[in-house]
Length: 462
Ligand code: ADP
Ligand code: MG
Image (cartoon, rainbow, N blue to C red; front, top):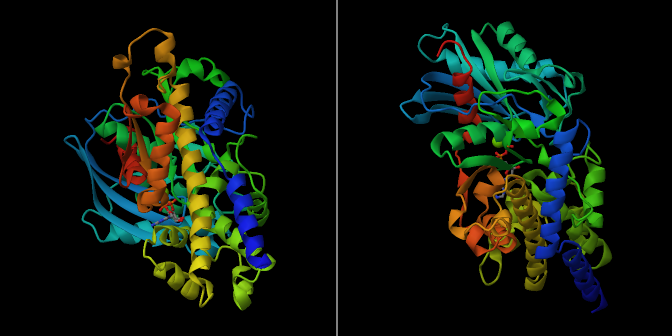
């Protein structure tokens, strides 16, 4: 029937629009490297902010004590107690709460009071509750750091929108909230989640040179030589290096495969024209891209019957659901049927419609994972670890260094198909031999535990 033909045409169009053949991924890699250079050259030189973190020395292994961390920046908010010592970092207690939606759009005082009260409840059940504690504050939004323990918020991302906080020192705001609630706790490290993840990854494996988050949002950081940070001339550190928070979620390039659905998605968000890379890759957005495609199909055909209207509400298809749809390998796609029925109120779909839905979810997943892979190779290339310099300098392949990238995030950890697509793309871009020297290592709670570790490094009472 003509209606079905229309759906097939829309599917083809979407698939073509999302295509990421290897040459295109290589263009994305090169664009990433160019933007990294531009962002390091001057403030505002690129959409990549390439932010200084003031983390110059990564933990060496001789830190000791009990430290706390707060991990704020996405769907969940976590409080951790971390035991540091004897070559290990162990999370001894952890509380995770969902941030009430209204607090993501209110005032900074309200949000941080909530954070402080949660920490207070956490600490009050412990011995010696009045002793001074050092806190690592993982705050996963772009921050212009002024020291390792202070910095002002540049802007919100990932659906947070608390206007009065922009430009303020978020560590100071949190310290004030902690004081208001009578807690003897002080922020000694203010870190991005990528930086916490890198710190923990590097603690366990010194070949770890970068960290990537693929969760609610996406971002990356890596260790840069200070003399390459042109925009901050005269920057001196003992190590000769500093961790740079790329804020790669805001990366943009004309080589990115953008479809009309991406434009519709952008229009629905509060941070329009920002975080373009993130909006193609991360957990908050993938399900919504698929919903937009299915909605268009529903409007232009009768595949979803009378239930078409049920596809019109933004953000009703979450990324974990998209993953579950893609994961369904039953012959009759019974899980897809269940999800359509229960979550999107679309009953009685024929098998070919369920296949269509699964295909849309697959396309969205594949593009996201492959673009993330290109981003990772971009960092490797900037660091001269993508193998490309080896042949030209006449060195043998045997001298390729092992490189570890610490990685974390609910999307990456919870979605095996995403990981497979990402690995596949890494091999395509790097080639088998070089890809074998690159290890992606998941750090569990790295963003939080790593922040506690950095709090340990930077507190005087260690
Ligand atoms: P954050 O710390 O930024 O809140 P997380 O790392 O906890 O983010 O990841 C949460 C995100 O990961 C959610 O937005 C969700 O979309 C995605 N996610 C969680 N579990 C899964 C899963 N099993 N499959 C796909 N995506 C998932
Ligand atoms: Mg996180």
